[in-house]
Length: 68
Image (cartoon, rainbow, N blue to C red; front, side):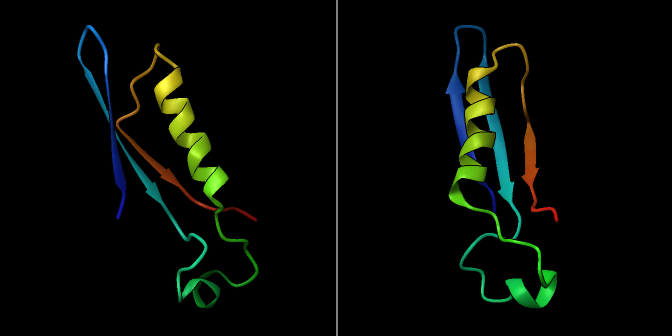
């Protein structure tokens, strides 16, 4: 399940949903993705940082998934 983050500006609220896929600690991670490394907290933090710092874009929904 994703986590919501709301950042208020003078113009309008900015609401984003960050959906991390296959993070550390998921019990079935190795069974579903094999050798692909699980996401780390830094990966999710990077997505959230981009959402709240770039004022020119509004990110509604972000799925953060590991790659090989």
